Structure formats: C-alpha cells, structure tokens
Length: 224
Image 1 (tube, rainbow, N blue to C red):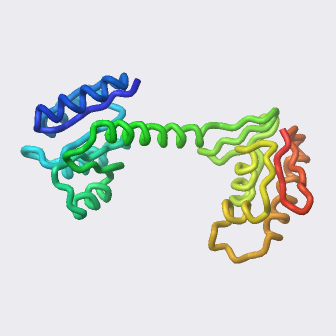
Image 2: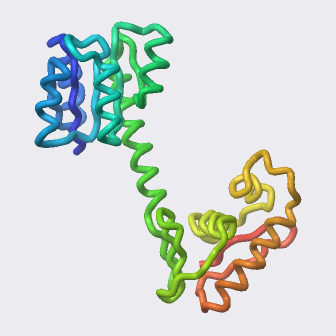
Image 3: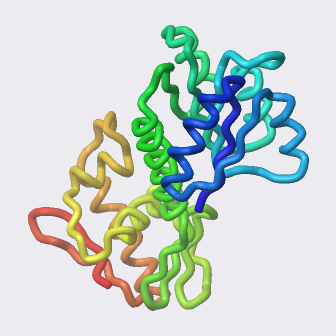
C-alpha cells in the first residue's frame, strides 16, 4: 500500500490524519516541520505528501516549491488559511489539492484515493499496447509491426493510438476529429478519411494482423 508523509505542527491533527489513513491501510509517517521532513528525504521518499501551510520555520508553500524542484509526487495542502489567495497559490506552486481546516477526515481520504486513482489511470495510459503482431508505445510514440518500426506522422500515430486503446469499438468521424485534431479544428471530416487511408496502407504493407475497418456511414474501428 502507498506511503504518505504528513507535515503539520499540530500534533492532534497529525494523529487524526494518521489514524484515518492507517484505517485505509496506508503507511503513514508524520513530521512537525519542514526541517524534519528534509532530513527524512535524504534516505527515502513517500508516494504522497500532505502539507500544512502554516508551519514553523519554512512554511508549507516554500516546502512545496522545494519538493517540486526535485520530485514529481502528489501534494495535498491542509491549512487553517482557507482564503482563495492561499488556495490558488498552493495549486500554482504544484499542489494537487487543497483542504481548509477544519476538514472532514473522510473527505481527506476520498481526495487521497482520487489522486492515486488518477495517477494509476495516467500510468496505465502510458503502458504499451499489443494487438497480435503490432505494438504501440505511447511514451516513445513508436509503432512496431513484427518487431519492425513503422514510420507514422503525428496525426497518424494519434489516430491509430485512439483506435488501438479501444479495439473493436467504432468511432465516428466527428469524435475522431475532436480527439485527434482538437475541438477547435474547423476542417472537414475528409481529414479523417485521408489519415485512415494512409495508416491502412502502411499497416497492410507490414502485415499487421489488426485491421482498420470502415463502419459505413459512421466511422472506423480497429478489428482485433
């Protein structure tokens, strides 16, 4: 289970957060100041930080800035300072969420779970996709067929990736335009047809087993 580090100078708040997080099977470590946290960061890292803004010495905003310079880990602020300026500043500095004191511990748990769920979704979104002899690597933007890399343009790759992520699902031309070309694209649906035509030619020449099929009067799908 995930490890969460809590930084708050109020012992009762630290204990309250720890108690609720541990009920959800999270591993929790607490700190009373940014300086204490800094010492711990020398040897290990958590999966998430929960930071109070009003800390003695280095405050939570400065601590968040320091964390963001070195680590890409989720941060939730909890603070008695609930003014809009503090919330906006905290989020601008890299905080993922903000909860004003007094807060419901159950709400904090929900926000923690939501952030971890989003991270998992993003991680899954970047995973390689394999359909028979065809592999798509979203991170490296590479497509290989029978182990050989195939040269795709940017739009060809994005469109093929869209279809590959939902195999056998028909996509309308309008949805493809919105997801690949963008909502503000004012071109014609013919752009989809032309791109599909080029993709189909490339994957056929390489002997791809997934096939791009036409859904007449609607759009296209990747048959797997």
